[in-house]
Length: 240
Ligand code: GLN
Image (cartoon, rainbow, N blue to C red; front, side, top):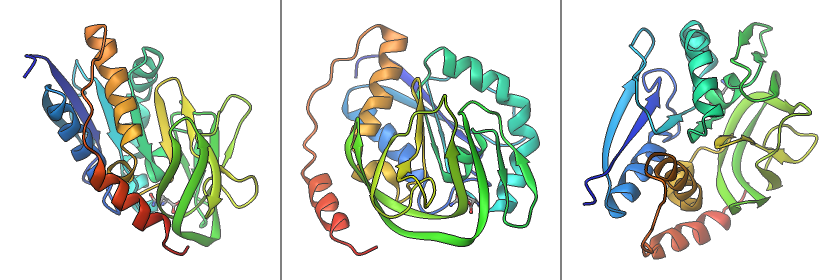
């Protein structure tokens, strides 16, 4: 151990955590431990006190009803999240929370769930659900492999940069082949699965940004990722 510690904050695990999204937090935690860091893991649910010191923030997907439940609290902590994002805190938001890090999600029933506008995106619920395995390419992390299940289709504004381009599946919407969005060290993506066990380059990006921000530099030893390669090979051969 290096005597150094990193705090991961899990946003709304009670309402926003489906299709294995909590696995993302477990991957970040375990890789940090392999790199010699101590990890503390904090859960944040509506009404909780927002912690003073956080190094990485992770959030998952949820049903429209879950998104409605956390909406008011998310809007309350939105300015704090924006401040942290502008201060380069790394974050990973999947599906339902990715949508609400944008301007709004208008559900297929016509209800508007307001987001915090940290990402310049907006999401419109459609009658067709986009479900299945998905592969994204041309991202800074190479090929990203996962699973999607959403009714919302997301459109990027002029100030949003996509995470990658879709090779298999839908991603943000069925029109423009983009997937996810990235702002500073904040990554939004539709990919469940969980995402990080099969895409540890993204975990290492979050870790490197967090450690560098806190301690000035990050020196990593190589982790034998042979199981990751097997999982990626198997998952990438699956049909849509
Ligand atoms: N409820 C949202 C939608 O259907 C998000 C779904 C999810 O997080 N998987 O688009």
